[in-house]
Length: 236
Ligand SMILES: Nc1ncnc2c1ncn2[C@@H]1O[C@H](COP(=O)(O)OP(=O)(O)OP(=O)(O)O)[C@@H](O)[C@H]1O
Ligand SMILES: [Mg+2]
Image (tube, rainbow, N blue to C red; front, side, top):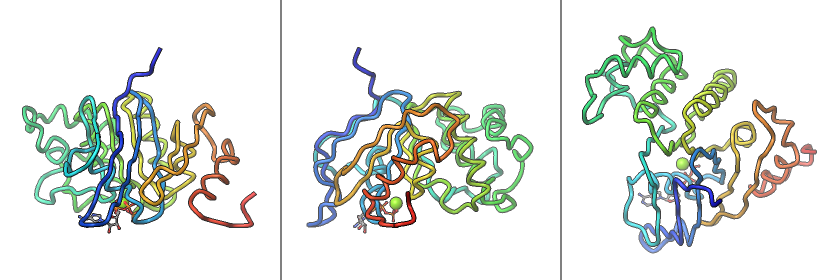
């Protein structure tokens, strides 16, 4: 049986002026599939994400998502004058005042006791978890994560990996995770894509059962680093 797709990108080209940042990109994400997208700075990862989020529609080719989409960005982008719970449900057409809904999402990211806090009183990791709660409350079929842990310290980042894995196991959205962290991709994803020169230049399937250790896919690690043009003789 053909797998059900939640996102389909076909022949996608994105130009800024004369310059094509994405050229003829094809990408499919299955329902419930976790895909990681790596690529050097400026390779077009965020551009692709914005297109899938519907934030940029000036494209050539096709970029279709069948269902609800949520995005969490590198910075949590919370409104400082709204309490945490209001940030979570902000902008929901019907339930923008639904405190119970916000509290449920906050408890999923282990922040139930911060519902009434002001954003400026949160740590970086807490703010990022509020951002995740805000994405989850929309019950997305496709969750787009643009380097959501990039600004966090290593320990907090590890805790966030576990949290995202738990949330994904529980809700099973399709995920497209943009990251610079190869190990993060190896821990979390079903498939790793590498973007280079505006195209998908490599794809690696990760089939080790979860929870994983980085060493479970040490072979793929070396190949992904090579795809990224990182040559380090210390890498076995
Ligand atoms: N609105 C815009 N106008 C013109 N050029 C843009 C615009 N947005 C992005 N670009 C250019 O497109 C290219 C890809 O940008 P993008 O933000 O997608 O890269 P990225 O892979 O997400 O990089 P990073 O890893 O640094 O976040 C960059 O060269 C950037 O300067
Ligand atoms: Mg980016």
